[in-house]
Length: 285
Image (cartoon, rainbow, N blue to C red; front, side, top):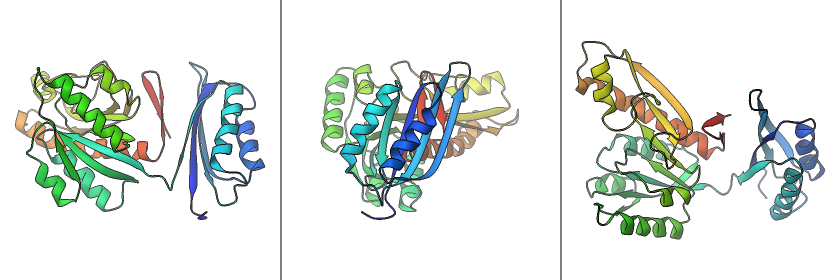
């Protein structure tokens, strides 16, 4: 096993004494070298969260045995947990409609080595951006959707994602509302970018809403998609200044810059296993 191979353990549970020691002792007993450990306690809800990254070079048991032991220990403390490995990069599917800015940004960052994952495919309800995916050697799949075909096309999309063993779905300005069934197959594994600072200006045409209200800051929000539109746990946000001189077109232009950065930050955080969703909120280590 390569000395550079690491594992990342994310966990959360009701707070109590001994949590940090229990995890550290289990890993130490089997040769795991802890490289980094971060923790957070929510005093209002009494929820403890932790992210542990450790080296596997001297692990003295197979990974499946380690996971079995973690399952037993985490069960003692009512922990919700998951583990990932650096030599098993997550496979990503990007969903997009006709706006190319977020798609280009993710593909470029991936080519530059900034995103620790594998962009396996692009899915769209329009053929327009096939050339963009082709430039980066990524497969492009079109599923045209209308009211009559939506359910059947979503089923075909899900079959594709299962076949390609997709770990993360990124909605890079995908202008379709996913069904509850679709979202339930990827809990906390669908990241959406919304072009406003949620919860303000949710729904359609947020830049128009912002212009009508004369706001002085516009922004973007990356969040996990849930069955409630634009209500999922927020991962990342940012803003840019605007003024009375700006037209709606100016807001759209400025907003696209923010959308790109916010979505990329959220995707990177997920790929690095730095996010824990706790109800309607997140902890981002």
